[in-house]
Amino acid sequence: MTTDRDEGGDFLRAPSGREYPVISRAPSSYNPLQTFHLDAEKHYQQQYADLYFLRLAKLKPAVEDVAAEAWDGFQIAGETVRRVERVLDVRQGELCWVAGTVYMDMPLKPNILDDISKDHWISAPAPREKYISLDGADRIMLEDESGRLRLIGSALEGEMLVTGCIIAVLGTENANGDFEVIDMRFPDLPRQPQRWERDDIDAATKGPGGGNSSTARPRGTKVAILSGLGIKGDEAEGLRNDMFMEWLLGEASGEKEQATVGQISRLILAGNSLAEAAPIPSRDELAGRKHGKKYGYDSSAYNPAPTSHLDNFLSTLLPSIPITLLPGATDPANVSLPQQPIHAAMFPHSRAYATPPGQPAEQPDWFHSVTNPWEGDVDGWRMLGTGGQPVDDIFKYVEGSNRLVMMERMLRWRCVAPTAPDTLWCYPFQDKDQFVLEECPHVFFVGNQPSFETVLISGPAGQTVRLITVPKFRETGEVVLVDIETLEVESVRFEVYEKES
Image (cartoon, rainbow, N blue to C red; front, side):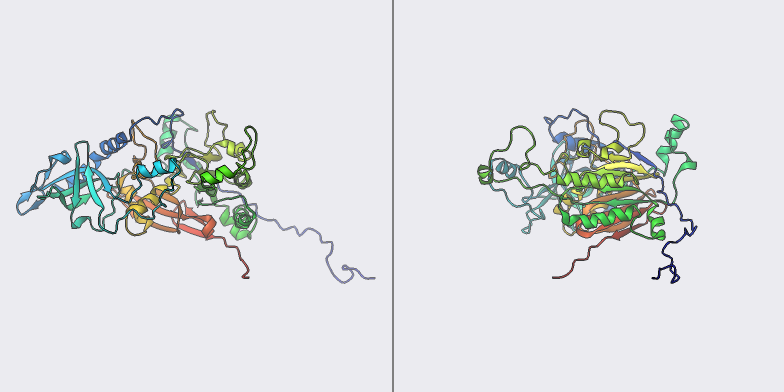
C-alpha cells in the first residue's frame, strides 16, 4: 500500500506563510441635499398655472441678462432692437426681443379626454412614441402673464424646444400677428459651486467635525451608477444580479481586480429597481375573478417576491458599500414628480442600515432612500440625477433621439423637468418651483436610457458638467463607473452565456 506522501505528494501541507493583502473599501464622503423633498402634508387642490408663473418669475431675469448682453445695440437696416416687457406689447413691424414661456401646441399630446376615458373603462389610445404631427399642425407659442404669441421662422428649424422652457426671442411681428424669430437665447448654466464648497462652509460655521476636513477627504475613488434592475422575483434574473454582487464584493475576481473594485466607494441605483407592475385588469377580468380576502394577506392580489428579492440584493451589498436608492417609474413610490423616497417598510432587512422614519439623522444613512430627482455632494462633487422620466418625456416632443443633447438643454434651460406639468405628472407647487436649478452640477446622470453615453459640456462662466446616460441593467448588464478625481467614465458589462438550442 502506498500513500501520496510516500510518492512525494503533499496531501497534508503545512501553511505556506504567505501574507495576503487585506483589501478594504475606500471611504465615501456623502453630503445629500433636500432639494426635492415635499412636506409631510401635501395638498393637490391648487391650480397648476401658478407653477408656470413661478418658473417664469424665477428664470426671466436670468434669460433677460443673457439676451441683453447678446443683443444690446443690435441693428438691422439701421433699426436698433428694443426690449419689450410683455408678449402683448409686441408691435407689428418693430424689431424687438421679449422673454416668456414656451408652449408647444401639439394635437397628438395627451389630453384630459384620454384620462376621462380611462376612468370610465373605455379603451384609451395606445401611448405615442412621439407627439410630432406629420402634417405640420404643431405650433410653437410664447406666453407670459399677459397673453400668448405664435413663433415662426427659419431660426426655429432644428431648435429643441418643449413646453415649459423659458427663452428670449429676437424678431418682429408680421401682418398675420405671428412673431418671426431671428435669434433666441436660453438662461444657460447657473453658477457652479467649487468642489468641497459645502463641506468647507460646514466646517467654518459648525467648527471641528462640522464638515469633511481636508485631511480626511478621500482620493482616487469611484462611484458606481446602476439603473433598471427590473427585479421581478423570478429565477431567470438571478444569475446576472449575482455576478454583479460577487464582483462588487470582490468575491469573483483576482487580487488586481479586487483592488480596483475596492476603490468603488458608493453605489447609486438610479430608478426602476423593480419591474413594472401588472397592468390594470379590464372589467371582464375583474368580473371573472373570485372576491379576495377582506382582511389579511391575499396572495392573488399581491406578490411579495420582487420587493423581497430587492431587499435581499441590497442587504447583501450594504455591509460592504453604502447605497443611494432613487425611485423610478416602476418602483413603489408616488407617480408624480418629485417622487419621494421609497418607504423603509419595503426593506425589512436593509432598513437596519438607515435611520428609522421620524427620527432625525445625525449623519447621512449608509442606506439612503432618496427622491427622484435627487441632488447631493459625493466626494465634494455636486451630482444631479433622475430616474429618466423627464428625458423620456422630452424625447416625445422633439425629432431625433440624442439623449445627451436633451440633457444638455435641460441644464441650459435650468429646469430638471420642463414638461411638467403639461405632459409629466408633478406636484402643484405654490411658493417655489423645485425643478428650477439653483446651482449647476458637476455630474448629471439619467437612468433607464437605451444605451450608455457620456459627454463633457461647458458653460459661459467656466462651468464643466459630465453628462451620463445610464442604460437598463436588466437589458444591457452594464454598470457605469465615475472616477471621482478626473470625472472620467467607463462601463462594466455583465453577460450570461445562453446555449443556443
